Length: 332
Image (cartoon, rainbow, N blue to C red; front, side):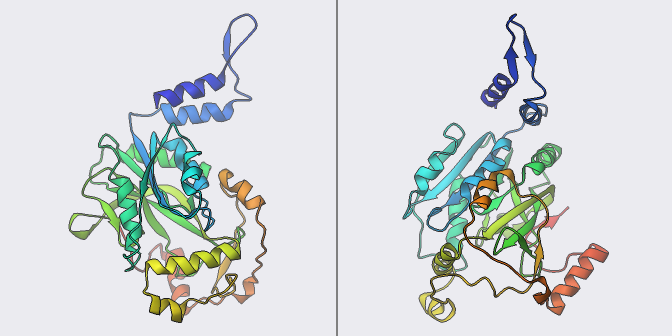
């Protein structure tokens, strides 16, 4: 953290022709805000972590994912699985000073419930040093908007010295088809834990969706005050089809794949129940990717076909503030 503080200071302070130094508030406001974010707080160490394989082949925005939370992290661990593309080199180019790579080999025989994803998550988590206070987890298709960095940091500071809090919970926006639509039915998970306390008793659960602690107990969580933007269902239809044909192998045997996964050149995005138009801004790290999008997906919102179950859950949540359904955590 000390090194990065001085890097920011060097970018903020300028020297006049008379030898005096001053702070250029107009041109360096972003640096000042980030400097305050990183330094004007109690001592706290945060380590980011993730896993990835074949990021280029399956068009994962993993670079954007890592960069989106890197300003909050003192260091970052990436478990890079042996890939069929240049994923390893892609990760090496992000930030060699902050990022530590561990090279892994996935056990593709673990085809029950996506178990291999949790195994790879734990490989990264278990290498985090014990002096870390919070471990910030991000998956290769998840991005945090820069407007949430300060609230998240404040939440970490607030609960750091409260050992009964195991982690912080994030809300989710699930984009589908293109960057213009989000899923609204109950098929999309609304919340997940993405910041956990560094604790040897905590481990990745099932298919790396969330975390548990000893004896399978759910983690006690507080809200992070932030959303995760999930882009896993926004890809070129060619890349999405490749991902679907490969990804289901992590959950199902070959016989199931033959019956349930359509072999095609392109993924068909039309089979969706209900979407909502996204009218806010995307994270800044995503803008280049969004602007280079080379496929078109339009959805007629009048075609929305929410089930009675989904409608009831949405009504109860919006009117009564009550969430119905499975929760992989325990709010305290």
